[in-house]
Amino acid sequence: MEAAHNHCTMSTWEPVVLNSEQTESEATKEAHASAEGLDAQPEQLHADFQIQADHMAEVHMNHQQVLVAAGMIPESHLAEVAPERQLEWMVKQLHGTVNPDGLMIPLHGANNDDIEVSTLQDDVQRKLRLIVREAGHEDLLRVVPLPADAGEVKANFINGRLHLRW
Image (cartoon, rainbow, N blue to C red):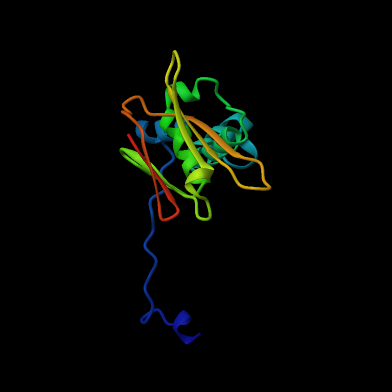
């Protein structure tokens, strides 16, 4: 309390010059700055939010993944544009991994006879079909496009894991 009244022990405030004119660079910055508070336009606030909301891309990707897994492709050209995306989603859904030249899916509890892998070359692309049968349950069926550079598909079922290479 004593220091507040003693000018010798306390630093002094340095005055700052207050200008009333704006330079051109400050005027440009102010014109491009987003408005805040009650002066802001809703369109500007929305645009600012979209720029800062980097999580929205992840939300959009997860939404597309759910739609594809449910059989409702959100973009009809998705399989043509990025077939590896749909393939990665299917493998991720089954807790597997995608490799540059194939994939691995754990199917513990399944036997060789329970798994059917086939490919189909249609007019547009080559597709992979995976069917896993389990007694007393509906078959697990997945059909996904293969990458354009995929060669002959080779399947191995080793230690409860399905390995596909192309």
